[in-house]
Image (cartoon, rainbow, N blue to C red; front, top):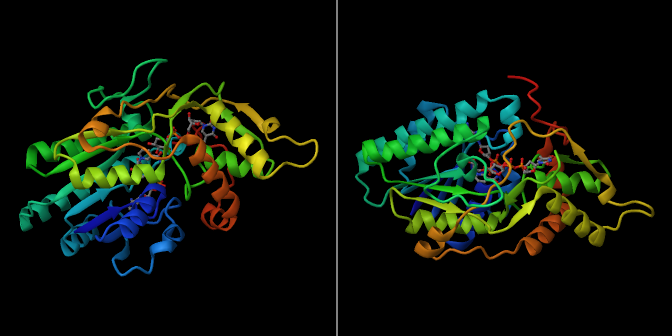
Length: 349
Ligand code: NAD
Ligand code: TDX
């Protein structure tokens, strides 16, 4: 099968491509603009494989996208390209509207043209989305595939818009589509703006560890390799027209996550005498519109596709800390001008 992956140089996209190349026999074309978040170093382990190829392109560039989709003629489009960081969407929402909404619209049009041209019964457009489209939960309850959309940040609103476009292309034009909504991912090759790598790197450099607000916000953490397996299963066995929620059944408060990272680091890299990673924890101004809790009801994908996460949070987090400690070169290479500064305090528009 020929699979076009958009955003394959990003965190989840690169994990997916490493999985597709190492564990399946499909041909993969990676289409990525290589924004600050896209790094071909993350694909070094499979870059020389003859089943893998890369093209640098912007999903907002209609002519290029039409040309690439028409000439590659994929059986699957797995669409991950997006602006993905909530704090950046608070500072500068424009790119999120362009890439996440207009870019998805372009890709849907190109997919529709291809589908009508080839009449390929095996074609599927898989849109990779987030649980943040459902908004924020209180102490109880879980997001199901039936939970009404209620996005709160410019990021989640743009992803919700793109989910709706994908659904509409399925209903109106008969394009075979499937949508997955996943909880927070963590693991190796994640850009160090996100909570877990940010905290690991800052702690290691003895910088303060910023916790937004009181740290009681809850996220449901999933290891990125478990997500990649789930995405492949949905892309190959999911029912067109359906949505599948994907989550780790791993709810943690942010304070718990940061404390656990400090514990693991203390064991792996004991801090100097009279120093403590925990003492670096600093409560800072809360994120505007900060969703309190995300938690996924994964029964549909468990029951219908037989998917279960394999990594526990404890083992996955330890591996992740070890990976960041051993891969300072990758972190330096990808960081560019970013130095773990605070983002998302409505500094621009
Ligand atoms: P990421 O920011 O690490 O990577 C995004 C990739 O998309 C980068 O390689 C970037 O270069 C590329 N890209 C951005 N704009 C582009 C454009 N205009 N044209 C082509 N390529 C472009 O993101 P991620 O964390 O890997 O997330 C991937 C997808 O999964 C996103 O759609 C995101 O909304 C979704 N998601 C992420 C998480 C998470 O926890 N990270 C959870 C659920 C869903
Ligand atoms: O420095 C920080 N301090 C802090 O307390 C950062 C960067 C974050 N936080 C908090 C905010 C969140 O409650 O940690 C939690 C996780 O934050 P992020 O890593 O920014 O992730 P989140 O906002 O939950 O969104 C992530 O999961 C869903 C991804 O970035 C999205 O792309 C995905 O859709």
